[in-house]
Length: 289
Image (tube, rainbow, N blue to C red; front, side):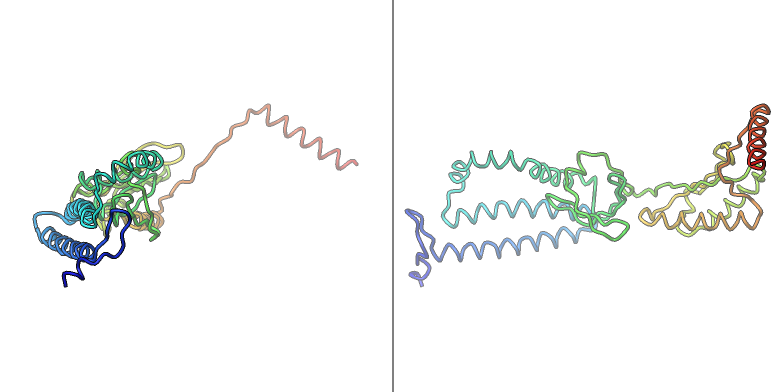
């Protein structure tokens, strides 16, 4: 048995790869996999930590353990990892300059996992795109858009640019729907109808209480807005669509006009007479010919 373990598979100059080294590396990775399983089980069983923080803690621990496991594997196989890094220092510098964006993404991934400003299942808005975070890795973050398409974002995009995290806290977000009523409309009736709609709208929270605001005197209509809070940030556009449909029906049933943009043109009498005269002269010439 000792001869089997000490058997040399191949050798290059002074380096020898033995069977025992392969077996030890194999056992090392089995032990590491078991340790990671225990760590994951203990972290996810903690009831005092929310699921997104559990995910971040486990991934950070996993990455650290994997790095040290790789170094240990090199040592077991007979490679001097320190000398290997030293000999490849110039090469690593060149690679680092060429891959600085990738290294920036890795650094950003570590920052995201440590700070937990963006977490799994958060609803974020990046460059006008509203999406749900489904996975955070060291280099990239995977998000799901409203059209059910997965998008891979480099982590540096989430740390260098301004983003909106709609679910950063447990407090619901506020939204609004606006409508323009004609100038002949009864203001009290409009507000009453809008109050009835928003107070009976599914998905709009009762607390904080929704409210209606008479916003402004616009060019051709009276501007009203309905404000409400909702926890369904991802599906709020569907709620807004239902509110608009109900507003249209309520206004139609109560003879309230949803005013269209209008422009009134005024002509001086002299200019109008000149134009009419020219038109009459042109018509006369055509008739005479």
